[in-house]
Every structure is written in C-alpha cells, then in structure tokens.
Length: 150
Image (tube, rainbow, N blue to C red; front, side, top):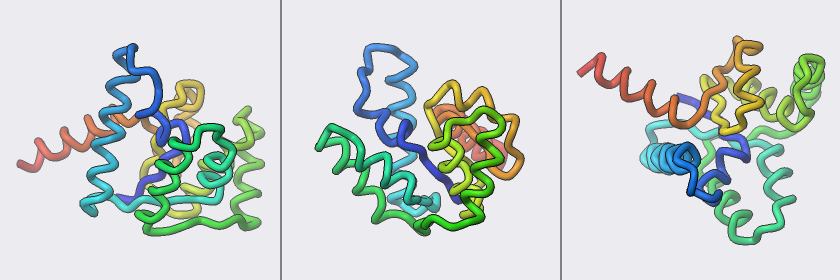
C-alpha cells in the first residue's frame, strides 16, 4: 500500500498529548511508522514535505521528520502536472501547500493521504484519486481488513 503523510501527520507525535484525540493520533502515527519500517507500506516523500519541514523552527522535529525521507520508496520532485493539478484543487478552496501535497500523492499513485488536519479532512470527498484519512481511521481500516481475512 502506497501512502503519503503530510507534515501535520509527521509532527503529531511532538504535539501536546493532553487531549485524548491528539494522543491517539500520535500513537496511530507511530504505529504507521513502524509498519513503514517493516515494509508493510510504501512511503512517498515529496519536495513539499521537505519544503515545509525546512521551515520548522524546531531543530529536533525537523531532524526527526527529515529522517523519514530515507524510508521513501519514491521521492516526488516538482513538475508541471503536479502544479496544474494543485491549481485545480486550490479552486476548491484548498490552501496552496495542501493542494500541492495532495497533488504529489496523486502523482505517486498513493492509495491514502494521511493527515491530522481536520479542515483538510472535511474536504476528503473532493478527491477520488486518493483517500484522505486520519491516522486513527487508517489503522482501524487495516485492522478491520485483517479481521476479515483471518
């Protein structure tokens, strides 16, 4: 399964875990990281991950997120088709960075785009080429699929 994580998702384990939802998303993201390490998912990395991560003011977070680049099966670089798709998504009131992230995931043939951004998740129905999903729901789906076949 080819997956793309946006920077909200990469950074979730560093957020204040006093809220149960944040704590659960962080744990789900850490589980997904382990599955990536074990080769259960193909991670896609993009120039947008790098661009946003480079802008982080937190050295520890920046280094921890950048480490995931080495696990990427594919690294997406900028190209005209990605920008064109992103412009279409911006017309649906997506922020430019979100539009570019989603466009990168589609260009890589991802089945899932993982994010903790609630505003972005509310627009999930706009996309048919990739499934926008929260890390908790992603884990739930995987477990339900596992239960179905075992």
